[in-house]
Amino acid sequence: QVELQESGPGLVKPSETLSLTCTVSGNPITSYYWSWIRQPPGKGLEWIAYMYYSATTKYSPSLKSRVTISVDTSKNQLSLQLSSVTAADTAVYYCARYDRRSFDYWGQGILVTVSS
Amino acid sequence: QSALTQPASVSGSPGQSITISCTGTSSDIGAYNYVSWYYQHPAKAPQLLIYDVSKRPSAVSDRFSGSKSGNMASLTISGLQAEDEADYYCSSYTTSSSWVFGGGTKLTVL
Image 1 (cartoon, rainbow over the protein chains, first blue to last red):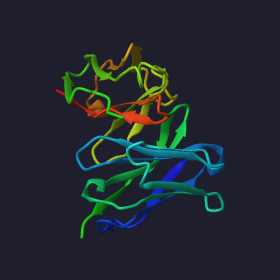
Image 2: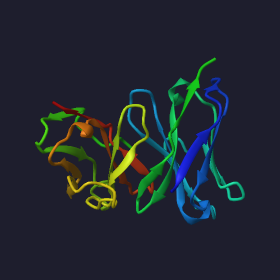
Image 3: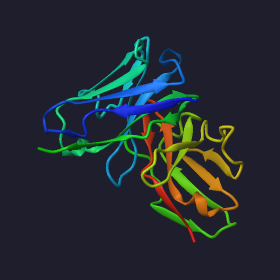
Image 4: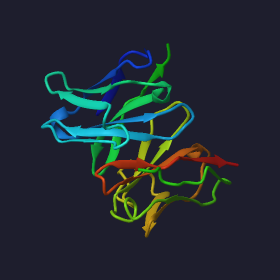
C-alpha cells in the first residue's frame, strides 16, 4: 500500500522560505511522477508542481518563480521549497502521486501558517 | 491559469441522482480528455473518484460516473447516500502543461 507523509515546520515567517518533505513508502519514488498541491483554509485546491526523479519537472505558472521541487531517491523523499512567502501562502500542503493523468494517492497534508 | 468553475453547492435526497458541472476553456477541459474528480471529507485529504473523464479506479463505486462535452465536464452520483456528503473537485490538464482545479462543490445529502 502506498503511503505519503508530509513533514516540516508548521509556522514560517513572511519573506522566508517554506521547506517541506514528503516521505513515500510502499512505492519506489523512481517509478512514478510526484506532485505538490495546496489548499488555503476554507478554499479550493491549487496545483503547485510535479516531477519525475530523472529531472522532468513542471511548475504552476503562477508560482514558478518561487518554487523548487526535488527528489531524494536514497531516502524515497520528495521536497518542496517556496521562497518569499506571504500570508497568501498559508495553506495545507499535500504531496500526491501522479499516475494515469490524475493524483491517485495523497498524503494527509500539513498546515503551514505564514506569520511573524 | 484560472480555476475551473463549479457550483458552490448542490443537494439531493438519499436515493436521488445529482450532477456537478465543471466548466473550463478550450485550453484545459476542451483540449484533452484528462479530467479527474476528487472528493474530500472535512479535515481529510482528497481522494480520486474519476480519471480520464469517465474512468473509475477499481475501488470506486459505479454510482459515480463522469462525462465531458466541449469545455464542460460533469460528475454524476446516482443512488445518493449519506456518506456521499463531501466537497467535490474537478481538475484538468492544460495546454500549459500544468494542472488546474475547480473551486469545489459542497454536496449536502438532505
